[in-house]
Length: 45
Image (cartoon, rainbow, N blue to C red; front, top):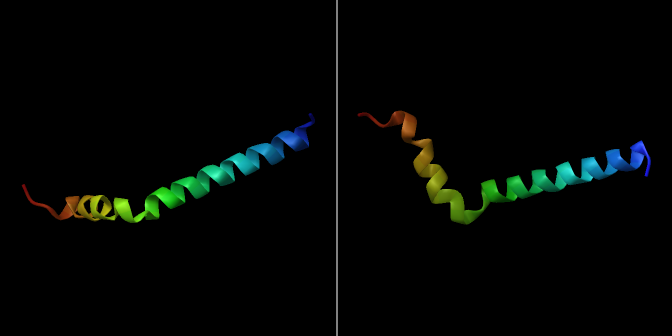
């Protein structure tokens, strides 16, 4: 296994992780939680 193969594997692994995070962030089941969290800076004590 040479350096080029390791670079390709690392790039693919990072891309798969990126797609997983993107899917999690835009999943419908997380929408309510994210909308609630987005209003935190505007809440008063």
